[in-house]
Amino acid sequence: MPFFSPFLVMLASAVTSGPSYSSTAPDPPNILIIIADDMGVDMVGVYDEGDSAAGFVPPTPNIDALSEDGVLFRNVWSNPVCSPTRATIMTGRYGFRTGIGWALKSISDPLSIDEFTMAESVSAAGYATALIGKWHLGDDAGSDEAPNEMGWQHFAGAMEGTLDDYCPRDCTGWRKVEDGDPTLSYNYATTEQVDDALDWLDEQAPMDPWLLWLAFNAPHDPFHLPPTDLHSYDELAESGESDHEYYKAMVQAMDSEIGRLLDSMDTEQLANTTIIFLGDNGTPKTTTMPPFISEHAKATMYEGGVNVPLIIAGAGVVDPGRESAALVNTTDLFATVAELTGGDYPDDRELDSISMVPYIQNTSRTSIRTWVYAEAFRDGDSGAAATGQTIRDRRYKLIRLDDDDEELLFDLVMDPWEGDDILTHDYMTEAETSAYSQLSAQLEILDAEAAAEDVE
Picture 1 (tube, rainbow, N blue to C red):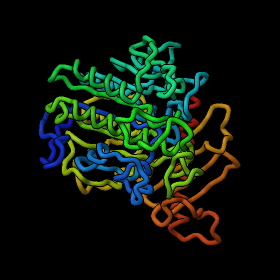
Picture 2 (spheres, rainbow, N blue to C red; picture 1 turned 45 degrees about the vertical axis):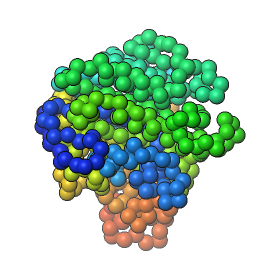
Picture 3 (spheres, helix red, strand yellow; picture 1 turned 90 degrees about the vertical axis):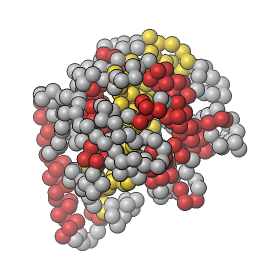
Picture 4 (cartoon, helix red, strand yellow; picture 1 turned 180 degrees about the vertical axis):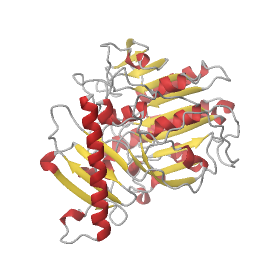
């Protein structure tokens, strides 16, 4: 069962000789959540899961530095596309509870204003809150004020999922909303989002804790050439190059701006900040790196679609520079932030979130979860091949696709790139058969919970 601890935890961290992201201060920590849009583990060199040995991944020195001063989580699952993942982080609840199962469009039902959000949780504990960057959770009131109405004291960014009108070569501007007021920005979005973050941080009182959710639109399409001072892909032309090269330049540009953000923060403020970096889903199929393949990338139930980077560094991290193999779901950020800040949660809502604080405190803590789950569904389009469910334990993974009720079973220890479907074998071992039965049974339990949610 998910475990949730709604109380303030005073944390101490080890003193290291590396960059001073960690802190021994007992104060309630500031929380900085940085979300990369469409960036799987294959695009972060420190994960060493793409073609990093050949030097094909983009340089991400600032993200890599976070792993040196924090905990890198190896087995983190998001949902296959962005809106559902953001909803899990925001609420700590699975998509079948919130109704968010696919990337939202203008006609989609939004995340309900009745959901209790992370912002509301930490605000009750005395935190200032801001969400800067991508929203993409719709609005329940037919206005641009949805982020503020759902507990964020300050919002500056794009309501939509992409910046399709923005192009640094032939700029027509992108629609930016600030606390309900729409404007048109002609600045490079990745840079402007960091500018907005720094402006907001400058306004915070030195001793008052804060939560900043910085959701970059990068490196989501439209793929483009960033400003040249942010990346090293000097050989790129303004047009005619592959999506892959533009994408990597966008990743490096985002990493450069993450570095500027951290370098520009007040030293004492940064020392008392817990930094959480993650991707919202896997890398797009036109840009994914081997050993992942396009058929196993973003918008699929394969690891290339749901296995995302997650690094926690800074205040509260004990013995940094570690990896954790614990099973983690993006819902878990909710309980983690609540435990770090002393945030609360109403008793009348089912929470699917498990705090990761034990992992950042204890170097040997084993996985609290025995299974982890992801899903994708679309209203009126449940038969689409990309929709379905997936669940894994520490070794085996079961995928159920809505299309033709297809099932696939993989051994992620022996077959991490999911090339050999065990269910096609003439013979299954006792361990494989047992894993299939247990994972299937857990899916049935979740299906029953989803059916109950529909009835309510």
